[in-house]
Image (cartoon, rainbow, N blue to C red; front, top):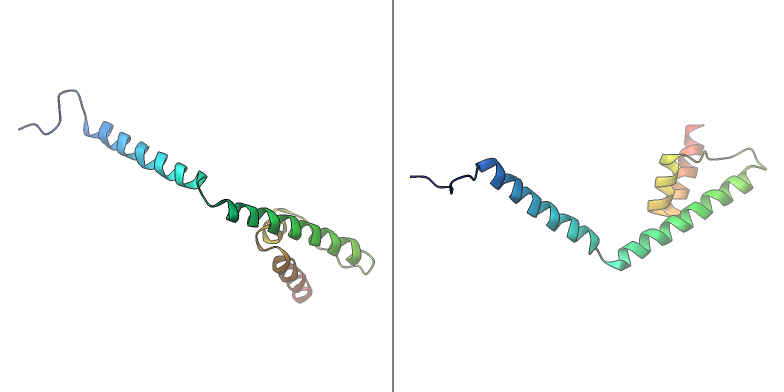
Length: 94
């Protein structure tokens, strides 16, 4: 007894199933709440501005935080608490 119609292989069915699941996941990603997107943008802006202010003011005292991918991500995702975390990290490391 043959379970699959002639010409269809099991790998093709798995590929179609994987494609359907992938389309579903991508669709869910694009439908995330707009409120969350705005919150991430707001945190990113506040974090970036605060990091710039810390470097501007801290430059007079010899205290700067290097802006690289890690510090930008921390300040961007966490906003003001992220910048405070970076300042505390810098103080305790030195």
